[in-house]
Image 1 (cartoon, rainbow, N blue to C red):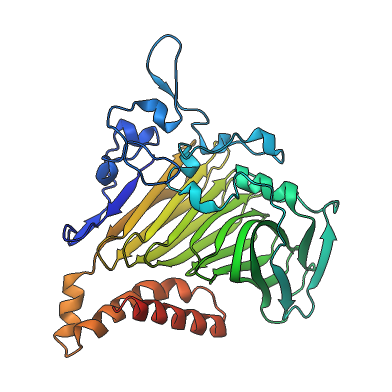
Image 2: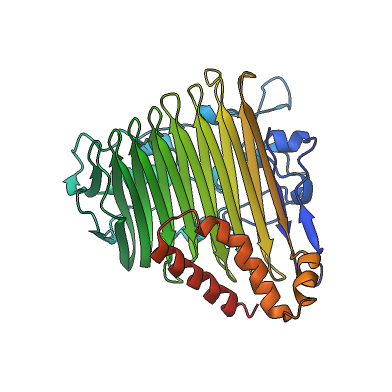
Length: 444
């Protein structure tokens, strides 16, 4: 099953609310083309949002035709068939028509998809490690590349360009002394590559925070290994300067009976595109993936995630929430959940919620659920995008709360669920203050 939700509120034409219908899907949705509210958008270019003629045909989506007719063929129709390779040559030059890139304004990538990534990588400083091992290693380290293989051209370019990697290891049966803070600080605009490996060995327990700030043009790969019985939380915070461009692949392999939580918070940057994935490698594991994003005028924040249930008796939960304000603020969320034939006993659910605060903002939401076996505990997905709930505002205002304060209370309550999943009090407080500044900047 697949569904695309596109919501755009041009000035003076915004509906009070718009909620995804998870009912019957038309043929365009099955083929990966926009449907529902987005049916008017028939094609996309490097600009990422350009309208094209309605009769452009299936080839605009990168689909091929049979030699004996005009029926489109969908290459790699299953999410499990997606190409993976360390070789950049295996990924064709991007055009903006690819399914994975159709929402991304390629011209704003500043060459991450076309140029050599020869710039200096952002500085990495690890603090609070205590009994955790931190190393800087060369490309030849045998541990690199064991947890993740690039799935797209930018990730492959980053793999081929990095010169040194940061490896963080939580030793077997070790409980980390406090949070492991990984400060990634950029200070240059040249296109650069970076590689980070996080290894939680068997029965260890830790919280690792990737804290991104400064100015960059960065293609980044983050590998995450969650050993058998380990408990690992990885929090990726993007509070970049306004001119930053950040494309990050954050892939995790999750072992037997492990517990893995991944939290994304994207607030800063001109263009930020994250592709988190969780791949189960043995039964009994549980994965939670949370996300919070707040886009201002002209900002593009994109999240494309994958949960790959490849083995039996595993559980996953995905909750992403976003808010948008200002002209041309744009967010993208694509959630792929794959339940393979062998993954009997799977229990999974994903949801995405978007709150549009002003006219002129746009949100694209695409929940995808692919099931290859019927012997599961449960599976589902949901997506909704809309304005403020008038009843909520009325309830608060009827109790003497001014409208502006009432609106801020609604937004805070909407986003707090994700912030509270971090479980690092100082960081939760900092991010709550950041959200407050976002609201103030939008005069909400």
